[in-house]
Amino acid sequence: MSKGRVTLPYIQGITESLERILKKHNIATVVKPKTTLRNLLAHPIDKLQDSVKTDCVYKIPCMSCNKVYIGETGRTFGCRLEEHKKETESTKVGRYTRAQKKEAEKEENKLALTDHIMRNNCAVDWDGAKVIDREDNRLTRWIKETVWIRKSTPVMNRILKK
View 1: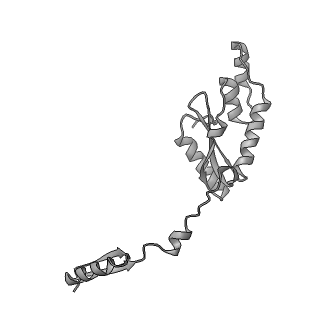
View 2: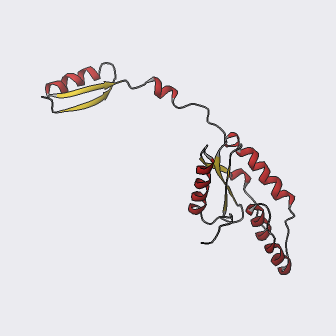
View 3: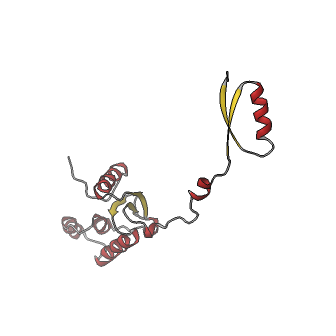
């Protein structure tokens, strides 16, 4: 009757000696190879760059404050990021008088990111933008985006009040 079982990695010359010693003390041994085909093939060397990833939730940080914009896309992240850049560059950002700032706050742009830049005179950290989650199911991706918005505070996103 065995007292237990031990799993050992196979190391030539050492594992055999350990097996004999453990067998004397009624301990069963299981030997597994140290390197398997799965270990060699499961971790590809080349990582996929964020710009070519699709079906993702992403964040874009603000350089001027600690807020982030959370978004999602089914297309490539690089393509969506370029759209954000074009949208924010197409609006005129500048210093406002108090009256002009009040007027600007009433306007809503297509993106909450653009609103943030215009209203707060901030700069976007485009190099800090990155993919934070991936999901190929659209509905589940929307849910993940919402969860990330709730988790990441403060955010630039427009949040509906309860």
